[in-house]
Structure formats: structure tokens, C-alpha cells
Length: 574
Image (cartoon, rainbow, N blue to C red; front, side):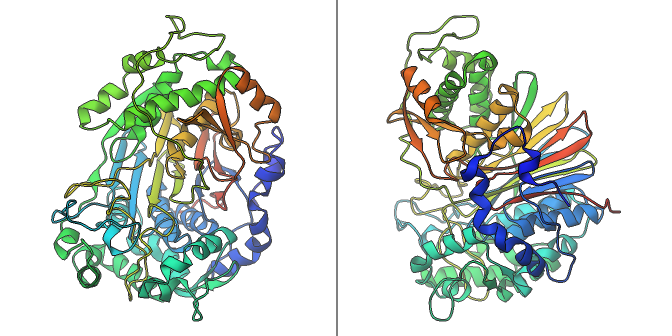
């Protein structure tokens, strides 16, 4: 039995809101996990924190966590666990991700090498942005899916177990069904009207009377099970060059979609461009465009110019928000690989840090506080609704391999389209959702898997879900851990800040998040205009793992604003 979340965080009061984020799900979890994991021993009941010296999985849905941990206990490594969890979560959290979506993967290999896989959705080479229809959802927004290619490549090149073995839990969840958790049911209900416009989506996500499924209902997806079985048997070939590809291309042609048989056949999961940095002695590794690792690294490099550890919480919050604002400004300008070297350089970060003009009692290290400087046009941050798209999972094994995997459909339920007979949703990629895209271009996003290393050895593997709040969550957690002196679970749970171009700073203030009214006023006294955001899950959702070198254990943490879990290996396999 894993440790309870509250007892493991005895040094921090989670408050009624933060601890209660899972409240509506807890009543269901015991029964749902047991029934949802049919055909195998049900996992031990747990919430967000677990520890094990043998390996760990943290994911946004308990059944996906369980699937990954089962692979570690069967003798697989962190790559096997990530593939199992990645396919499983595409089944059990279908509003957030899908095999019809995109994936970014980052690995720390046992020999300390860092590698990455870019499996982002792509505009077909025949796509014409000048004449293509613009839409918010539907066939017009669908690009070439990448998730299957990315997961299969991860299994083939880095895993140790057969693909059919690691995909078995996902196939079982689809074929035998699983019980919907409250959050997933609510998201499906919110998109039900648009989903009803498409034959396949109606078939898979609405009941016979047209109403959405409710929390606790059994969702059976037999067409998806057949699709997954075909992928497992053919090593993904059927998805891009075989029967599945033919059905996708035919459906797209009938309904005016841009994806063709040729664009599927030519799709390749590429090597990700690794970007590196450091923060107060810890090494950082992320991936460049189309992911946002450089953004997070730049923000941390900017913050390294300030002694955050000696600041008050209010001062630290103000600086984190300002550093993120500058990094987001530069993120809009990032392009060729050579720009990655500039934007992740310490020299560039020092220049950007010198532009920060806040009424703080400290200055830029070595140069004093600058008084202004040129500011590039920045993003306008709208009042964030709950950022309900994307999923992230992290895995680690006893050999020191770590995997950060972020998978998404774009907005909740993506394009809202599922091809009849195949059983999965496609991501939103084209049609203006991500701006204008050129033929062959891959979808650029805020996805930000990140590795933190200490003397080349594992320290943390993390990433997040939540749109533009993904790098925000990652940077905040690292600052809380390194500068705030919090434990890893506390750092993930601690309140976050984000830049707000209209005012200055967004503060996470929902009940239990930790920003007290007094602290909010202290920030205002610094001369920083703020907006408080009281809704849960509005500042990203981290699922990460830390290696505790002193105690020789992996510590897994699932963000308390979601329904995910962390689960360590109990019975090392082999």
C-alpha cells in the first residue's frame, strides 16, 4: 500500500481546495480501478505520492499509471513503462490525448546520454494554407498524426519488452471497458454538442439517446481495441501504410480533410533537437521547436541572475512572473536551430535580466538593478479557464533511465472527429488553431518535457499539461524546489505564478493553493499589478519523479489538481 498523500506532505498544509481536487473521484476510485483493471490484480489504492527504489510511474490517470508500473514489474525499463502508459492513457483519458494526436518524448539513458523523439502532428506536403478552410474543429483542422510513430519508435529503440506486451493493458482497457472518472466525464459532456456532429464521435462518446456518458459509466471501445491490436501486431505499419492508413485517407477525402495516404506513408518520428542549460549547479535538458524546452531553460537562466533564495515569497513570485514574460516574448521569435544556442545562453539571459525593473530590494547579480530597457511585444494572457488539454507522464527505472512524455490533442477532444471503425479522435493542428502552418511544418506548442540532472546523474524528470501554462508549471516547480527549499512533492503542489501582459502577474489563489490574501497584498505593495485566478487546474498539471540520492528511492508526484497518480514498483520483475 502506498503512502497517503496527506501523511506524506505533513510539512505542508494542502488546504481544502488542493487536497479536495480529487474529492469527487475518491469515492469511485477503489471500485473503478478494480473493475477497470479487469483480468489482472487491481492496483493498490493511492493518491498522488509514492516512493520506491525500483522504479516509478506518474501519470494523469490511475489505469495508465498502473499499466506503466506493470511493465517495470515484468522486467521492462522506463521506456517500456512509458509506452505502456502512453497507449493506455490514450484509451482512458481520450479528451486529453489520442493515438491520433502528437507526442514529445525526452529520455535520460543509463549511460547519462540524453535523447528525444519528436512525434508532432504535421501539415501534409500538399497542404495549402492560403486556400485551406479555417475552422475551430472538424476535418479541416486534422494534420498527420504522430503519436503512434513516436510510441512505437520509443519501444523499438529503447524498450526491452515486445510491443504486444506493452500495449496489452491499453487493448484490454479499450476492449473490456473502464469506468469514467468525474473529470473525464465532465470534459466529454462539455464537448458533446460538437462531438454529435460527427458519426464516429457520436458512436464512441455519446450514448444511444445522444447524451454523454456520466462519471462511473463503463466506456467500452471495441473498435479502438481492434486498431490498437493491429498496431501492436504490425509494429505501427498498419497505421501509416496499411489498412488503418487506407481508412484514414478515405475518410479524409470524403470529408475534405487534408491528410492523404501519401502524407501518412511519409511521416517519420524524428530525433528531437536537445537543448541544454543549467540552474544553480543543476544541469537542464529539454527539446527545441516544436517543443518549448528552450523557453523554460531561458526563464531559469534569467532567474539565476537573482538571489531568489534570500528573497521574500512576494519578491520571488514577482521575478518568476517577469522572467517567464521575457522568455515567452523570445519564444515567439525562436526559429532555426542556431537560435536555440543564443536563447539558452547565459549571456543572453543576463541581458534579459538587466531589463527587469521591479521595485525589489535586490538587483541583478554583478550589475545592480537596471532601469528599464527595450521590451518586445509579448503575449496577451487572457483570464485562463481551466487548461484542460494535453497529458503528461513520467517514468523511471532502477537502472537510472528516465522518460518524460507529453501527449496531446490540442484542445479538449481535439478536432472532435473520429473515423467510424477506428475508434480514436484526431488532434487539432491546422485551420488556424496553431496559427498559419506551411506544408510539411510540425505543430509548434508549449509542450515542455524536461530533465534535471545532478553531476550527470538523475535528479528530476517532469513535464506538464495545460497549454501555455505548461512551461509556467515546470519553471515554478523547479524554483520552489531549488530556491524555496521545498521537497519535490511540496514543490509540485506549491502555488504558481504566470505573466500577465495586461496587468503584470497572475497568481494561483484557489483554496489551499497557498497564496494567502496577505501575501497577495504584499505583492501589490511591490508595485506589481496582479490578477488572482481561483480556479483549480488553471496553472498547469505536473506529473514528475525525483531521485532521492541520499535515501536511494524514486519519489513520484502527481499534480493534486487532477485525477492522476504515482505508483512505484513493489515487485521488481525479470
